[in-house]
Length: 350
Picture 1: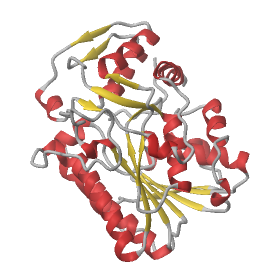
Picture 2 (picture 1 turned 180 degrees about the vertical axis):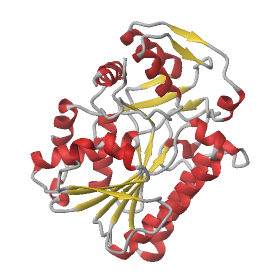
Picture 3 (picture 1 turned 90 degrees about the vertical axis):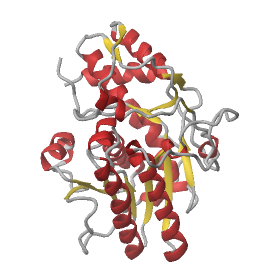
């Protein structure tokens, strides 16, 4: 069975997003840059802007920054003739063309899967630090508002006496481990956002994501949930390479996108916001079992390779507190069961 890598959300998801109580008028006639455009979250954000702008009559223009035209045309083929969609092909670590000006920047460019952490940690750091600096420079020059896509990994593991980690928790990461390239890259990029705000008055906010899942995954994504989904789509048993006892906060892709819009349009400058569904806190094994039940396959276990183990997170518990974002009006809709069922269903479509 072929997997539809270009399919992220559906009409039901877009309707839910477009009906959110957001100040949509802020996007009227706006130009938005989305970096890392071929990724799961960035590509779905592009879809949401272009699908919801008609319902909200905001006439928004979207530019996707990515390196591969081939991948972009496969992912965004439906928009290539849309005058409100544009491609910008370049490395995120390079300066933007001087004639490119945007009111909003969503900066999501970063490798975010374990094999990248173990094979190319320097590239992961460069995308997060140097790429973020380039986007902040553009925001500084053009008075743009920037939303940086960070991660709940900036916290490390939950302290034993903390049920869920709020944005005020400073976190703890073992910086001398190569796997730290991702959380430390995110932490450094957040510090850049704060520094540009302090020194230059740049309007920047950050979204700290929990574990986001959805149908639009890429072939090179080596995260466990992506591998589980590939197994399920092929009708194969889902193979786990750990006991799966790590506790995680998960969030369905459409809920994540609505959360990003709340942060972009309502978030306070200089602040970070967790995107985390309090009703979707399960172990990795429980997550895999739900997907196995949806797909009608079995769950089994296998030892990981040394390279795979090198990219694994050492965090046994990563539960985020999403109440700060909820105070802006955001409310997640999808349970883990319903979200995984939809993810499996959408991924089967060609």
